[in-house]
Image 1 (cartoon, rainbow, N blue to C red):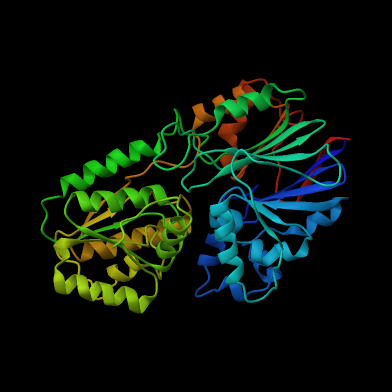
Image 2: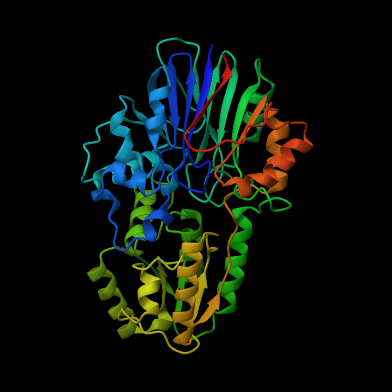
Length: 450
């Protein structure tokens, strides 16, 4: 069976992920994401109102015109998880393909919300839920099958999809952390990865996220970040002024820890910001998390400001606002607080807890720096870097290569500089550039089996 791969997006940057695999006459697309930094450099860009071609020209979404070079029919669009760099281009591109979107329940719900916000295209692709561990046949033959293997990441319900073909398995490895004691959900299913690596045919190709490949050691568990956060929260327990926390809105495990620890130190948690309400509300509706019944979630600006007024009236010492804005996003809650644009008044000595790292990208770094300086100018004390990454470090990558023993390796989710440490690791394990180690770019296609 012919096996061909198109590396469409995410092979020159972190963002706008999209890869297509053709097995015979059947094609599966993995991810359709957004490069948010390409949007943020433009003022007040509303992506839902833009045409796909405009966003392609901006470098914000994948240029999928290379798909015309693949001779086959798209049978499924498979996002690995619900982060925007993996799903936010679906409303702009999915309607071009007569194929369902297949994803885990939480991811499907987030895709549905993205599509509902679209105002340029009519996207009516079927949305199919499949749980981790599930399988489905691809195309009319019984030779190609899609499987979801459970992984752990900084968002719940993440998977690595595996396309089983007569020539071996193609494992799409974006994005994961090797977490054996997660705060929410099941551990990464390493047993299944080892089985796939040793089944008949083995692993033909492994496409891997290289985000942290240059960092030594292994990525700690989310349970480590949870204990770090608990320690920080306990350290400010006796402070009688304002404490504000921020983290990734999609990081439900971290948000649930903040909610729990706020109660532990005698404060009422409240979630503020559109994305905070969106992700936590969705997770609660789908029973991934059990928040206290009186937990407030407010996304609309008027509702947020009313809540801030209530906090100021009743006493900042009784509340923990958990807000958007950990990257310094211009319209997020924490940024507005730093600019003095909300009824919440920061006083000298008030604590701001960043349970997130700045994403290492110039736009984010600049915005985060500005946000922190504005907060400091109001006297805020910054508690930073209470976080663990959602991506593998060097030893995690080594373990995955050992488990899967792939015939071919394709680095992804980085630029050429970011690929270098992973290329070095692969070469140390016997892979050779141009033979079975394929460093590629956006828009390329190549055949693994002719």
